[in-house]
Image (cartoon, rainbow, N blue to C red; front, side):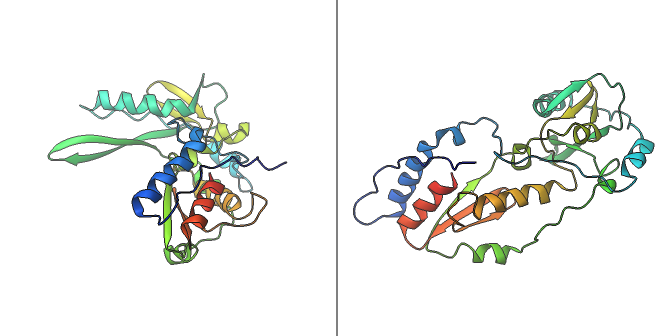
Length: 247
């Protein structure tokens, strides 16, 4: 497909570029790509997730059956409902007919100053489908490996909010085997969910493609650590150019 047309950037500041001036110019670059920072849920363009099962995996998943709904933790009902509302933004409600399996919602609770707080709702795919998913080849790197890619005096960091959930899940079988059961009933995801065994490999592979040549010009100086991307440059101008290219 044709590469996206690059947008005109603000004029570079004159004279010495201090930390304060550099930060202000980075914000101007971000404003050029304002849709990336509009607070909405993004979509990773060109990336889709598909679950590949091991031989006999589907039969094993069917044997494991549908998990019972996990109860809402006592005393945290209001928090639970708010987190559940958020989770349902990425789910499609189904009637439960012809279910292959359904994974439980697991509340993650922590105590702060003696008060129980519901931190998030996780999905327990480990007990249903993870064992039967084919591993996806991935290049595992260390923190040192990644930091070596961003040698340079000038740096910035982009936090990819939602990370895995920016990858769409369009394959219908994949959606069905990742079904969930909640106190509200059954639902299937429309985005890649945290807790899926192959999610890190799927996301990382697409991120490497994005950073290391999908622009048609070759790699830029950047490194990815989970949902953070660090960009660098030997000069302020190179750093600004890399940030704009990534966005």
